[in-house]
Length: 171
Image 1: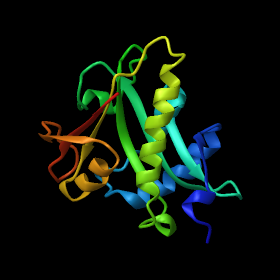
Image 2: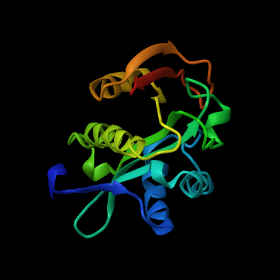
Image 3: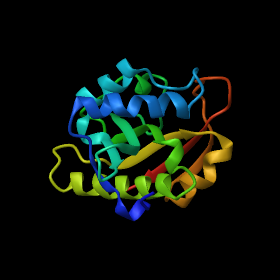
């Protein structure tokens, strides 16, 4: 198997790549937390610049980060189903890695490169992104903190059966 250094990291280019990402989403999250294919397609069609993936040499998707823009400084229940192109906060909805690529550092690599891609985007964007925000379960906080995010505390958002924590990375 290839290493994470051998993967191509880029913005998704086609709707078919979203279709390829959805089984990873469905396998990676409990059913009450996973995004639907329709939800992922909505995010992609409305914010394609915020859907970033890692691809093998054969073109298979190994992992991805998907987000939308919002005005509030933290992820809200509303921001999980909408995109505000004037929003300055990127709400990260999913960081997901295919099972065969897990525990290799790919999620951390994706997050760090995603932040770099947002900084590049800001150089020419009409609306500059000032913050990335996400929700995390407690057991994943070290992943996000290792990628540069700061944990704010328990979130007021209820989604699924477990508690969530607000995490942010200010640009």
